[in-house]
Amino acid sequence: ETGVTQTPRHLVMGMTNKKSLKCEQHLGHNAMYWYKQSAKKPLELMFVYNFKEQTENNSVPSRFSPECPNSSHLFLHLHTLQPEDSALYLCASSQDQGGPYEQYFGPGTRLTVT
Amino acid sequence: AQKITQTQPGMFVQEKEAVTLDCTYDTSDPSYGLFWYKQPSSGEMIFLIYQGSYDQQNATEGRYSLNFQKARKSANLVISASQLGDSAMYFCAMNEGTTGFQKLVFGTGTRLLVSP
Image 1 (cartoon, rainbow over the protein chains, first blue to last red):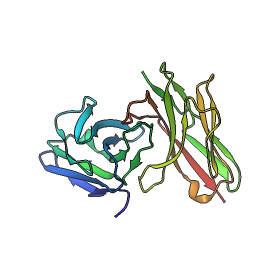
Image 2: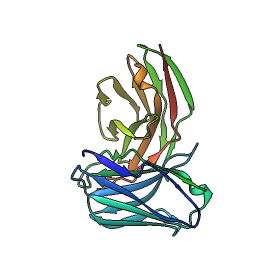
Image 3: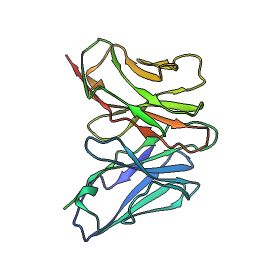
Image 4: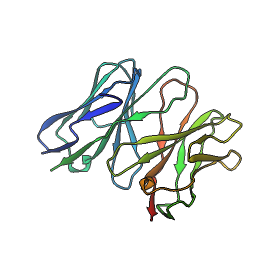
């Protein structure tokens, strides 16, 4: 595998379910990001991890819970979501020294909350 | 606060023609970076080109060039010799400062359609 991978690519879940999104980067980067892309809205930065430490939480509801066990893996744990949480969730990674460096994105997980 | 504005919801261009996608930005930080990304229907965001605020020359990457006008706070993307595969959403983004990790702020995007 190369670049940034995300699984699953599509997910349908009920409001009472618990699920997790997975992201893995094979680029040797130290920073990883979660973004939310809703229809007709700009990408919204949700979380930033730098060397496994969360450095940014953009007022994201607690029903979204990130986890970064190492600098190559990033998870987004989902529970009791709302229909308005349906969106494309994109993971990205980048270098974090000097820069600025471009972010490399995964293909995204298309989430539908029913 | 940062702000990125893309005023063209959609653009049409014929194959082999050049097209300019507009982007204006607002920041009070003298150090910033500007990025353009392409998002095909598959969903993945593909990095195209970068321009730093202190760069003296406009950035170029193959058929992509960035028309950077600092005084006007604009960073338009120019695609030369358009191809059918260029049909996609295009996003302008910016980050401020020189801290390591990048907090990118994105515009709403422009959908480009290239016709034969």
